[in-house]
Image 1 (cartoon, rainbow, N blue to C red):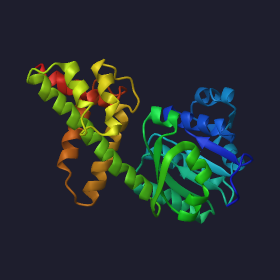
Image 2 (image 1 turned 90 degrees about the vertical axis):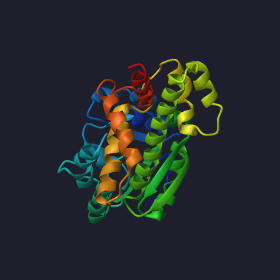
Image 3 (image 1 turned 180 degrees about the horizontal axis):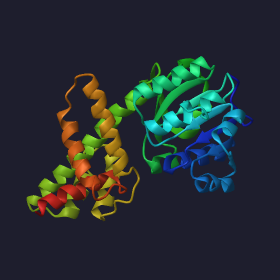
Image 4 (image 1 turned 60 degrees about the vertical axis):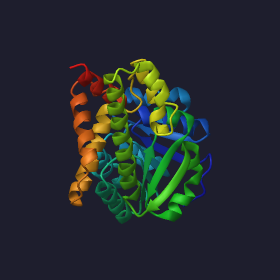
Length: 296
């Protein structure tokens, strides 16, 4: 692939909470970025930052040398890439794709296979980190696909992330993301249960949350959740509904491998109960769900 510099034309599909932040980092680093989203309003909001807006996937694919996408689920990825009017049927041979959504590894492999048949090199590069981490450039990227292409993409990767790892062939990045999010979701549920236990035993809630934040047992990904939960602030950094979706993908992958994940199943159940009431709040709202059980 050609050397990546400020003249390289990028395209970005899916400019929601994560995607819009990545686009702003790319623009701030001097890249030219064309964007497309089903919500024209979301795409046009990035014009002030220097983005251009494409009218269709075909328009974006025809002009971009490197395409990035950050989409909601497998269905959206398949629609954007594999539909007749999708990216892979309009991108020129030699185009490189960084697909950054959290999806089934087999979907990543399918998109890569169809892309390869058309001369398009597709990598799955999953994002580990929440919206504040994207703003700060401290996310971790987990890559699958051609290692040489991954290495050549380093100028873009280091603009987005603090660290980035190549895990193997196509689907390895999304598989690693499911592994990471299993730890993320189970860890959050463990914190919620521990807090509920402490409150049930009569510990002062604020002091309990403060002390837990000083211990070595709370992971960095969860550390910032405690002071926010202390204030009952569950404004979304990673919405509960997305954690719920990821739990489903994790358990589906485990089932296909005949692997039982009892802790994940239990955490998924509490997450699902909370999702009835608070799907768009932060996934740490399972703390509130467990506290509500203490009060019953």
